Length: 497
Image 1 (cartoon, rainbow, N blue to C red):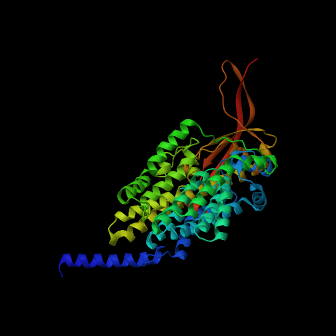
Image 2: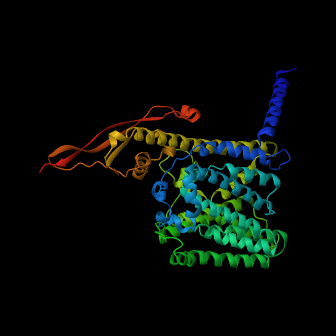
Image 3: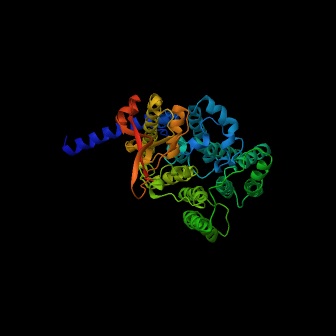
């Protein structure tokens, strides 16, 4: 046997082993169907650190929850435009913050299943494409900020939207009525008032695939959806406020002309390929019947619809948020503005696999799935280690309660920044929340200043220094201690009278 033949034989053996391994771990079967048990196992493993957050709280959740004061008093913020949030949030918070993390995990899983049902009814995707797109949607690393409890009400609205959209693909009077009701309720999430156009694209494309025109039923649904969006935005919130259902929202997200123009330009460019395909089909065939949009065009359109609401209020996703979303940056929790982008990204990646040669396509798809899974796991693992740091700070402050008794002014020197998820900075109100949990007392966070002129030094509070004591990998595996605090007098310089 020649050396060349030996290498070819060895290559075939390796390829056969890889194919066997792929057949065991891939959520897509050799026949191209979706293996739900395998996919759900992937989903559980990649989200395991999220479930391990237990009672950890991040970002704006601290002032939003107000640590035991109840949500009813703290709903006068932009995020409480969704009514009845406190009805389910308050008892679940009494049970424990962990219950909301578990609910978020379950809600995102159900949304993924509903996304698959919509793909099945599209008449555009093959079974293999449906399986790949669904797998990527489940594992797509585009919303690490779902660890924030404040995002949960919006995820529930997205669940209602996908459920309503799935019902609207069933052509019965009952399903249509119930579907419109759910879609209308979902529009309490303002961004769905725009993203809802995706539903009309789905129904219209399906009509054109089957016939020569968009059906009357689809036009009726389109008009009803636009009316629901108008009513949800301009009438229902004011009505519910007047009835006392929830407090008047303080909207810190406002649409400005410059933001709107930028959103129209950027998202218009994303949607252009889909629109060009429609125009080109009409020019060539003198009719829209038989139009079948490309998967890439649909993905770009959905990405545009999912991005437009956030850009129109001034949130412009940076490069790391759009492409390398889990590289550490100072974007902090800006990934909360990507809740609606998963559908577009998953379809775009699936469309890209078309350019891989057919006998390598399954391998390429598995690589894409693995990359998404690794990035998602690593991001949630970062939040998990961040939560251990939070746990240690709270426990050690509680142990030092005698030393901190009566102290109302603290300064935190965080020397363990590399333990913070996504390179984020811990805000003052997060430190305040940790102290409130540990001691049950409200404190102010001191920001150092340097007064001009001669001064006397005096102790006005305490300095809490946070130092790293353990590695990330060991903590991830054993939940070991990661930081140690030390407490000293906070010396301030006051002017000499």
